Length: 187
Image 1: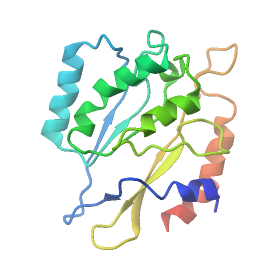
Image 2: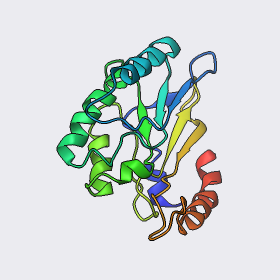
Image 3: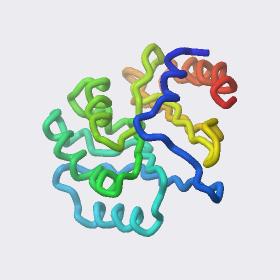
């Protein structure tokens, strides 16, 4: 098994099905906000989380507007606001990048490390696999220390250079790499 993928099985916050065999995931995508947040967006996210009480929140890309957020300081300020609904409730959350997340003038690995500094962010960068926010999140059975289910995060890696194609040429290789190893991780 790929050791980089295997290391993803160790999370700073363990995920487990509840005693009723349930695990609720809230998926948010294309928030595309800035530090001048529209209050309705944050209130809406807060209300959804309060109502649904998810076990995990997944941010599916374009988590911010990187055409406006440009610095590490701005990203940190934004993430302080954006992550508050999850962090204050101690809900684990994970992210992948979309094209607008890649637009911030900060190295992608550095951006990922900034996200990972948050106590309940359980995303991981997987070394030696093309892309930045590629990971697997294991969810264990409620009553045993075995993996019941895995959630896979794959980074779209922005655009192919000098084109408007939304998926880069290396995604096929990345997906093949995951497919080769996923059965071992699902055991």
